[in-house]
Image (cartoon, rainbow, N blue to C red; front, side, top):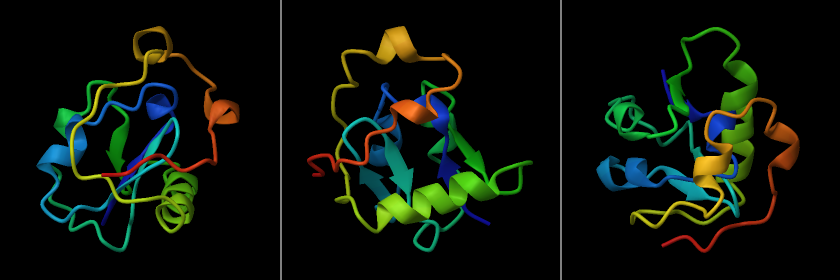
Amino acid sequence: MTYAVLENCINCKYTDCVEVCPVDCFYEGENFLVIHPDECIDCGVCEPECPADAIRPDTEPDMEKWVELNRKYSELWPVIVSKKEPLPTAEEFDGKPDKLPLLSENPGEGG
């Protein structure tokens, strides 16, 4: 099993989750975080830390596309291990549906 970051992270990018990850498997895009599914050890400590409720185990329904999206970008983006301020748009976009078209493929700063 692994965990994956879902659509609600887009344009929010809260980073509370990265501080608790014992294996540093989060990667940062410009407006989204992802988890590398091969590095995740299934500890689950990140899930309750996400203010946007955007992290789920791959055992939930319809998670295959999210695991693959997380895999794709974790191989392109830099690792992130330190908490940062959320995006300025976080409150406005938290909970909004259909944000996938807003996903930027640009990498974040990492760190």
